[in-house]
Image (cartoon, rainbow, N blue to C red; front, side, top):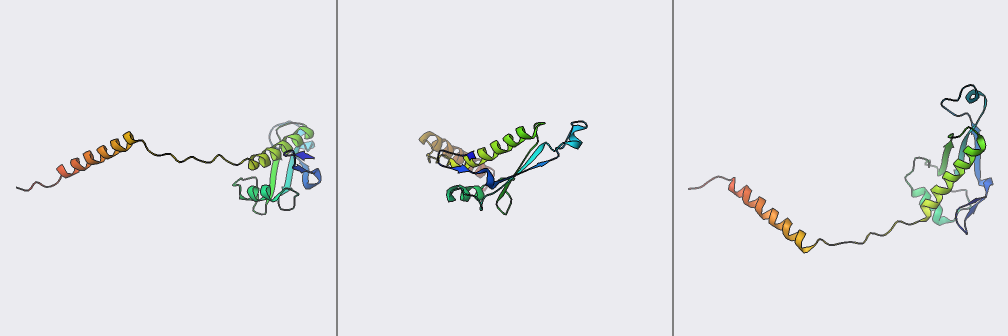
Length: 137
């Protein structure tokens, strides 16, 4: 079971984990042993609350496919167990990150001094442009 919060738990039966061969260096071992882990998690078919599902689908993340499946590949470690823990940890972080709502922005107003400086710059620039015009006698 993967614990997201006190109330939200994902059973491991909803997470599909398969072992694949890792890429990169590793000598003879890399060709023989499938130590990398490929994790797939279907958002729509899961037991997550609707709040989590909606936010996960809206999330612009390259790990989420158009069909609503999260795909995580972990191949950092040489052992399959550590890679499995790594992939599950990344899934947990992704779902927990969606649970927290971003801070609301407090609208601020420009200060009186900054407004005055802006208007002064505008009038000075306007005067410069008028002085560039044709001189009438």
